[in-house]
Structure formats: C-alpha cells, structure tokens
Length: 363
Image 1: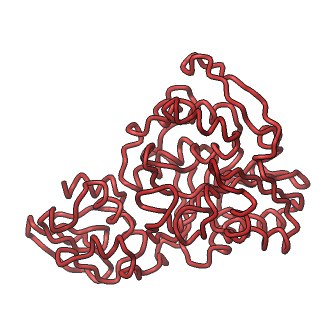
Image 2 (image 1 turned 60 degrees about the vertical axis):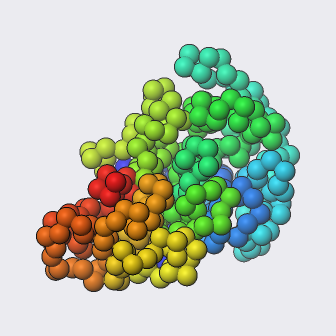
Image 3 (image 1 turned 45 degrees about the vertical axis):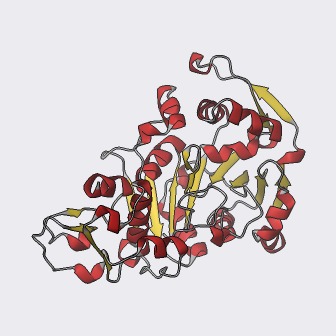
C-alpha cells in the first residue's frame, strides 16, 4: 500500500498522509518511536538535499495525537560533515525545543556487526548503529532525489546514515548497490515517510531542487523505491540495489496491482518555478506551459534531464498544464504531458505522469 498526498502546508500534508495510511496497524500507544531523516550535509532543505523539518513535525504531531510521547531523531551526516551542524542548519533544534524530542548523533554510537543470511551477499559483514537496530519503531524519512552514482536515493539508501563513517567509505569501494541491499535486509524499517517536496534532479547534495510538494508513505522500502524510481525516470530493475533487494525477498516492485491512495490530487500546486536554474535550462520555445501542476512539471523536468537534452534537441512541441484541457491536436510533432492533454493524439497519461513514461514517448 502506498499513500500519496499533495500540498504546500507540509506539516498538515504529512499529518494527513499518515492519518490515511496504514501506519496505525503497526503503532502502539506508549511505544518509543525513532525517526531517521536524511541530513546528508548541513544544507537548508529548500536546496533539495535534506529532509524538511516540517515533515518531521507532521509525524511528531500525528504520533503525539496517537498517544506516543517518546520520540527521538537519529542521524549521521555524510563523511566529513557534522551531524550537529546539520541539525542546526536544517531546523531540527526547533523540533527539539518545541516537542521535547531527543536528537541523536549516530557518529557517536556503538556499532554491531551483522551478516545477512542470504548467500547472495557472500557473507558480507556490516556495522550498524545499535540505536537503530534496537529501535522499537523506526520511521525512515528520506528525500526523493537523484544520486550521481546509484541514480536514485530514497528509502533504502537513506539507511547509510545508520552506519559508521568507515563503513560509508567501504560501501563505495564495494560498488554501493550490494551493501545497500544487504543493509536493508539487516536493519528493520517499520515505516517510511518520503519527503517529495523539492528533491534535487541530479545530485544527492542538492543545488537543483525541483518542486513537487508531495509526501509518500508506506511500509516496504523496496515497493516505495521502485515506485519512486519510475517517478524520476528510471526502470526499477536498472537500479542495482533494488534488483538485489527483490532477489533476496526484501520486497516486491510496484505494479498496477499495488494499492495506491492519492489524496488532494485536485489540489496539486500550480507550477511557479520558472526562476529555477534547471527550469530555465529546459523551458524554451518548444515547451508550452499553461497552469501546470508542480508535480506534473517536475516529471517533465526529470524526463528531459534523463534523455540528456531539451525540448529543442527533441525537436517537438511539448504542451503541459491545465490550460490545455479540452484542446486537441492531431500533429505528430506535438506531445501532451498529463491527463489534461488527453485530447492530443500523442500524450502521456497520468496525473501526474511518471517520468519513465514521458521518456518512452519523447525519445
């Protein structure tokens, strides 16, 4: 089951996402809940790299109303970066003061060495922070964004923040994919809440955010990551660690049979990011945008980036936005993006469409 919600009031959007999800089935009043965000570097969340504190605030409010008061946030920033500075720069000290949550720096943790039973991992041993392993209920809160090496970073890869720095370095020497999947098989994640507000299009440390204003929630990280891979333009099987995870029965890929609950689909925020550097790069005479929702426009941006070109290099006119409802086109040189352009002979269905589907049409 996947629950998706849209909106610019990120605290409320997150709260409402959880209220409509199946997380209640796994929570118990009085338990201790640990939350693992993505604070890879000390960078404000609007740069597209780190988890918005508003998302955690929505989670905390939901947990408090459910009857859970003992909440801790745990993270270890990337090699060479201060987790404490990341907590400060990313606005998490506010959460500590307002809600009395505990901020834990996993760089100071004790670590336990574990080995997956699955022979697929060839006896690979991994050190994992004891606070994460011992968590009564662990909520994983990654950012949906691209990664320069693994293409996608979301639920599974966010678990790297639960290992020591020497392991983070070793993961890279091992090629990242196999150890990421192995880590996911060893560290139980009880629920995932994905920050899909403005993840970066190209790089895990941010700088080129693409506004989407969506929160995605669900229990299985493989299911969610496979779904999110398609959102940003990748076939799940092309992501090495997802293939490993499916083969070792950590989870199944998203399919048309997956239950998806979409909230506020008619309230997707209107695209207003023309000043964005990437939008300037891609937005040109061949893209005709008229009241496009941010999530629909974000899918187009992801797709254009994946094919390595702009609408000029594609040499076809691209129409996107609610302003094209009811309009028609018979031209093979005009491509409609999203259900609003369903009157076009050539269009990509979806509200929003997936970047992976856009790529198949524009290439």
